[in-house]
Amino acid sequence: MTSNENDNAPANAMEDLVERTSGVGGTPSGMSATDVQTRSELARHLARDVYPADREALLARMREEAAPDHLVDLVAGLPTDGFDYENVQQLARALGLGTEDHRT
Image 1 (cartoon, rainbow, N blue to C red):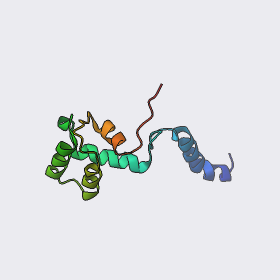
Image 2: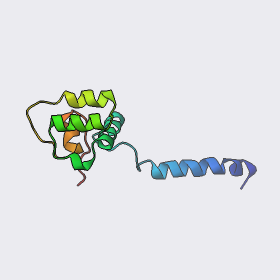
Image 3: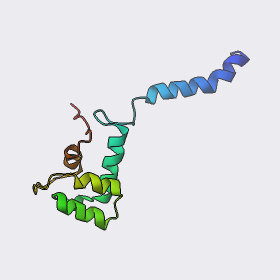
Image 4: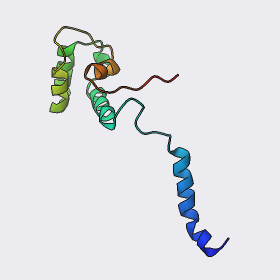
């Protein structure tokens, strides 16, 4: 191996690593990075024990948890029809967020 080849060895190893792992992690199919972040924030402020819950119960929990205004505003835009959301995924869909495509 020549000295130039040795100098490029770390760069080549990094390129190989990036190529091998490029399909790992990241944003799930069917979701944008914003969708992932918003759903994560919702889940952080709405623990599993709140479900099933309607709009009013979700808003009450979000206020208890001091959720950011942008999240409270999102949930406040839901219909007031008394529908119970079963989980954060169903809530995300109702809010118009992208959700993960099911794997086959």
